[in-house]
Length: 208
Image 1 (cartoon, rainbow, N blue to C red):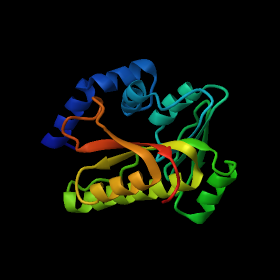
Image 2: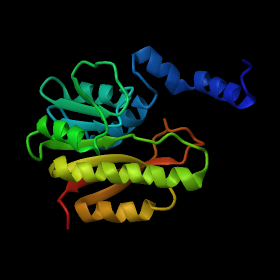
Image 3: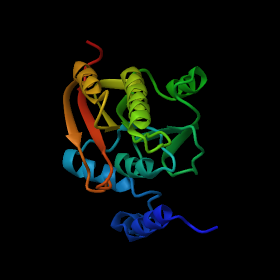
Image 4: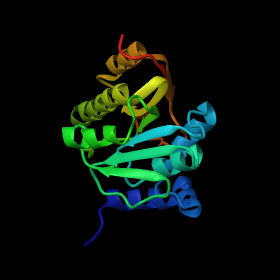
């Protein structure tokens, strides 16, 4: 079957991508690893010994980075509705964390309020239509925030992918209600044509 012009363009962009090459050279599962590494370099949010929850983790690029940074005394608990090949230092729970059974399994693996950091690079299957995709992206971010409020320790942090658009300012207000600071991050490893950005909320103080 002949590839479309669009798919050929995507393949060329993909294989010309410096972050794709670097991820292959360094053994990372996805170029997304470099987004987290950039944010880590700027903000130092992951420290040795931390407990990190990674939502929407498959194929594991962020979990790999987190496991390296927390070290042997830390924990990384990853969750996704998709399967994920095992990773050293990562505990994986397959399933939808918004379903009670999966949430219970996640909470059983954590003592109450035990997470130092919740990270979410989740995105829905994109349709290419902003009116459809934007609400889906923001809904996932809201779900991740709901989970973060359950599991984070006081002063914990939350890192989540969002898109500019409807619902963005509402989410920012919600984050400011629960965290001491909220910063916007746009890693260089994010594709230039992508409208994705990351919100980094620090100093969890619970619901106001």
